[in-house]
Image (cartoon, rainbow, N blue to C red; front, side, top):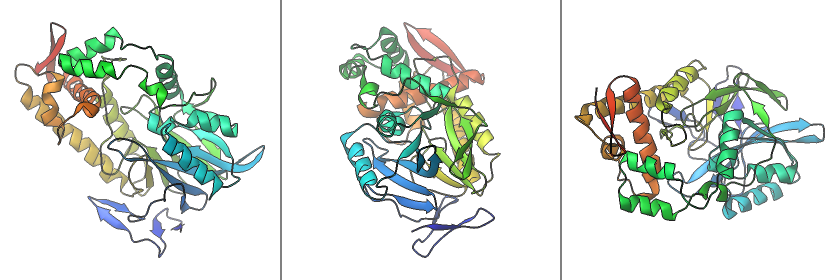
Length: 366
């Protein structure tokens, strides 16, 4: 199965697909998706692999782009899934089946999160392929792998307390240890090829421009094929959920939500007709509608949060204003990071003031 790409870069599925629409977005492939351990063609020279990941996201999308180098033809691989036995088995099935005999020429990581680069080192080693990432993403990944001490650092404990965690929540998090990232990411190469915003990658006979966004991660690389009308968006644009935007212990005075808004405005300058290939969810068209919806959702949450602050709320106190479901232990860290990112954004905008009381951060309306 494949799609027909018209000269105006509008995608029309062949008769095997029935397009569907939802909230201003069109899904040209309907509900079709790759089978486990198999590939699904998007257009000639671009294939889709979907891998399962633990947790609420359930899956991650990876993309194979027809390529060639001095050693011959192959594919450039964008993202890999997490370092799990199931993901490894799926890739072995792909390269023994539909991609039998095909070599990875380039290993491209959109960003440092384990569900996207968990097997990047494994791929680089197996195929003798270079790793391509932005510097901020590569350095962050290397730092997290290297900082695999046994105990949870005191700075992290203080950060959790500042957000309002109680003793039981901190104790439960301490039991999980500190080396979780290293367990789900294979060792990365010591060297890499840096991707920069505006760079053009020649992949096969196609040119892909690097478009860097921020907020979800430090320097997230999207890949834009202007001639074909395709954007590999990673987690910078997802069709049905808003990517996590978190304030973390490594940069507690940052403004990740402000960076996220700036990235949305930047991506809004791209053509609305692009076929968007997201890191999670299904390929879609309607880029501007989705960007507008994400921007509006976060700004509405900020307004609700500002009205709720009163004379002081901790990060953990505002979950009910930001999330539509109860937050259990498995999601507590991500929810805390997102809550603090929103509170920090209100502080930057002058709509909140942070007071510190016995090491705990309280945000009151400004």
